[in-house]
Each structure stands twice: as C-alpha cells, then as structure tokens.
Image (cartoon, rainbow, N blue to C red; front, side, top):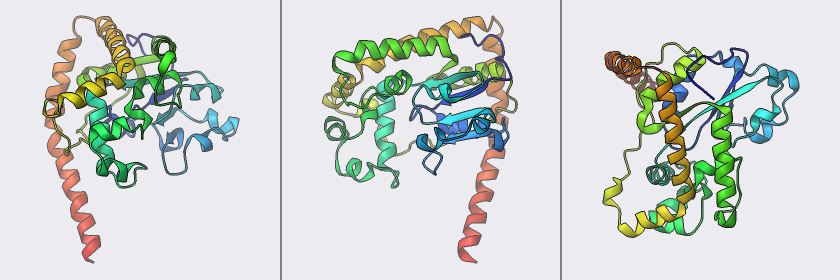
Length: 281
C-alpha cells in the first residue's frame, strides 16, 4: 500500500505494535487522534485476544482504531475495511532492548528468569519466543515454535506479503520522525508532537556485549534480518513517494517538536508532584 495519499476515513486503522519498536511513544500520540470509545486496545487488562474475538458485530463496527501487541489477522473479524501500520526495528537492537525491558518489568511473565540469566542464557534456553524472529512471528500471523526450522522461508514470504499488501505505512524505529510524518498524512492525524517514552536506560550498547552473544542473537534472528531489509526497501519507496519537499517538512517538524519539550517536562513534573502529595497526605 502507498502512504502518498490519505487512507479512506471509513477504514479501521490497526496498529500492529511489535515489542520494543517505539510503540509506547506512538500510543501517546494516538490518544490525541481518536475518541476513547472508538479504540480497542489489545493489552493485559482484560482486553486481550480472547476477549476481542468474542465481541459482537456491532461492537466490531464501532472500532476506528485497533492497537496493541498482536499478530496479523485480527482484521478478519471486522465487518468494515481495515488497514494496518507498524514499526520495524533493527533485529539485534530490538531483542537486546526486549530482554532488558523484561528485566526491569516485574509484572512480565519472564521477569524472574531474565534477572537470573544473562542475555545469552535467556536467549539460548528458549524461554520467550519473541527473542527469536519476533517481528516475523507477529507479521506472519503467529508461530508457536521457538525455532522456525524448514518453515523460515515460508513465514518470511508471508510476512513480506502482508507488509506489501495490507500496511498503509511501514515505519522504522530508527527513523521515527519520517515515519510519523507519513502516518500523519496517511491517517489525517493532528498534533503529533511527542516526547520519547519508555526508553530503556538499563541496557548496554550493542558493542559492549560479547561477540559470542551478538553472534548467537544474529543466528536466532536471521529471518528478522531479512524481513527488516525488505521493510527498509518499502520504507524508502514510501519516502520517495512523498516528493522532494518531504525532507524539509521533516526538518521543520523536528525543530518545532523541540519547542514542545518544556511542555512535556512540565506535565511530567506536575504529575510526579501530585503523586507525591497523595502518598504523603
């Protein structure tokens, strides 16, 4: 799909949020674009996949935005047309970030295991399948086994086909602002200023990890490496469709977005102060 023109306003937008691809930052932007009653969020608070598939046709029809950590295919439940968007991330950076996210998130299913094991040990013991080709898993529609084995090429082709045919925008985490500008145009969004959220501060840089660990993560994520290369080619094609003035638009947006940062800091400070006052009252 092309992002050079806006999508049909009657279509439901589906944000397929791949773990650790800047989705938390985007969720904050999305809250300003859609009424809460028109949004269905796949999360861990009761609105999970099992709840979603039990909705009535009238409930499905009300959804203008479906978002969250999900596998491709939930559009098949909707009676109205739908189009997807997502962000891809360089695979080794993503799995490193994901592992350290688990370590600092007590509510995560694998929190204790991640804190008891090194990154290499956690990945090699096959505890969490999203450590191995997690982006391909979600975009192909899900795959339960840790090792793709002989099915790697078929799953990769399926994920590529989905990206090419059913995604209005394929963004890249490493090029967030350009991706956001294309999303704004494709879905007619407004007020897309932002401050980065949920940025991991407890993780080492890739070059600080052992060569053994990096080599093993690359072996685990060969299919994701190929998918990411394909996603980059789609991204560059989308950029080309924006025209010669697009780089200037992105530059202006970045400049203006810097001026909003004091506002975000003030909001965070005010929230912290309010929370402290509740604790001491």
